Length: 128
Length: 112
Image 1: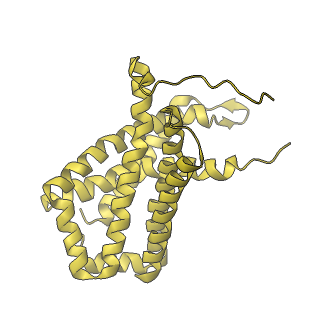
Image 2: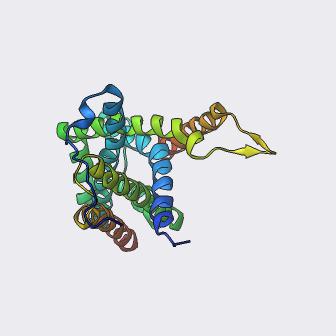
């Protein structure tokens, strides 16, 4: 093993050069907004544990213009995460049933079905 | 063959990616659109009842912990892609932040 391994210089903005690199980076950066929304959820749990007034204050903050704006940005990235995640499932987890590969469309379709079912259950649980 | 810790990092990453994909968009639709519009109310009593229920606790914990880990792992990889390296600082920041979120979430669910 070399004592002075060659490390190729990486420009910080290499991904801005080509459209597909930008698309890749946007896909990876969805995780930043997933993480941000997780922070919001934990703040929510924290406020819920503090009591009724704290919880109502949290809901008011969510409904404020900055709160809504932040969540709409998160929603755009989270939806893009869902679409790209479902699209790569047949590549990441190819399925075989009785020796036959399951068509990619079927795997992706099952994920969309699960997405619809989960969304419906959560909406009903929220009382819509 | 050398043992690798990669599955330990990767399995919750994949699970978190799936949980995030399935549940986060609808949650944001509720908290970011339907609650501000007044279509959905999330009353304190109903929310605490849900958080009291063992199954409710498990759902809430999974909804926070798995996507948080997913985000941490992916951000670490993206930091590498952006030329920020993959050193101890990047790992500590990404996994540390997710770890704090997960521990706080667990503590709150125990407290509620």
